[in-house]
Image (cartoon, rainbow, N blue to C red; front, side, top):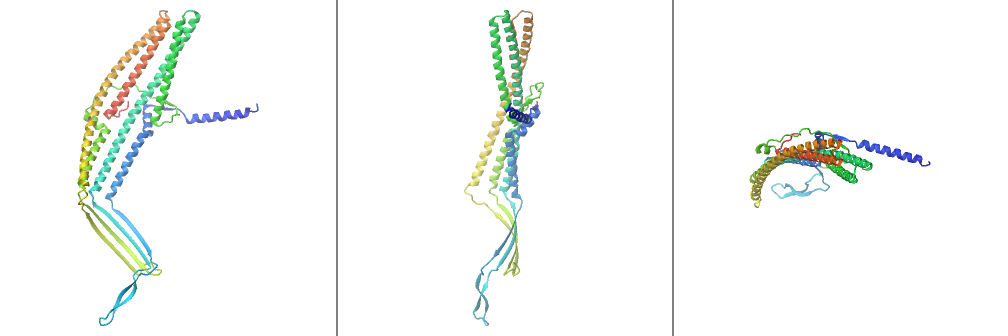
Length: 448
């Protein structure tokens, strides 16, 4: 009893700690819309793409600086501790005699200056090209961000549907395991009563043990799916999540849109188009490198000099100057011709990439269309099989109640019903997953 109070306190502390953890790790409910919003908020790939776009926007600002005037202000103060004495002719003797020289102080003790200057580029084809490149890079960044966003949303919808599938599979497997356990218990009672053979008992027990293993595997798969579900949306792995969204009816098999409409809605294809335009900008920039650069500048300066304790007053001055500069590039060792050739090759590369992308998109649409049609037919077949299996299970249970069949036959029918239900759910998931791929491939963003 001496240790009763410490043990009691330790229990209370542990209880409070666990309650704190439970309060912090509360269950969150997610329907499809809430999950997609969470993914867009926390997904690191989207965050990286957004940072790339922000970086491209800063490049536009840097390129724009070339069109604004540059303003500078400079001031200085000098203190001369030694005099600069120079022999200087200061007079001549009357009648044209020799010059009279005298040491003259050529500097002042204090020198104070203030300068202000403005530089303005009037014409620079390179600066214009740099700005156009930066603007085009920003557009490419916007298309790339939209590409990543649509890809991540498609993956999120598929993971949401997959997680719902594995959770439904757990429920189906648990119901089947429950029925097998009850069948085994019933067979054991009948065996003890002498109305069933040992073989019937062993077969029922084997069937039950197999279902226990299958349920454990289904639960493991569900936990793995929930890990992927949390990771994609940046949800803490320790947080309990509940999927509340109901999919409702399956979307109809979509009509195949025109290829031009698909290409217009695909941000990845738009990125390639913008890249081709960027190659055109590069070629024009290479051609304009032969043009001159024109700039102007204006400067104004104030100065004052004095001796002793006086900073100014002994000699003051001001000056202003306006200049116009023209720079004509004459020879650069063949660099500009090399730029033109490189830009032409870049244009050809982007043209090939566009053609490849168009063929790939068209092939993907045809393939997805065939797979969607096949998946829709598989769902119809799976529904017919599930209805037949459900009817067979009901008939077997009725026959068993009337003594016309064995309990193992009923168990077999129920097992077939569970397999049919799993097949139907898998077929529905496959169709929904293909439909999300179809949305991504056609550039549509309709929520289903």
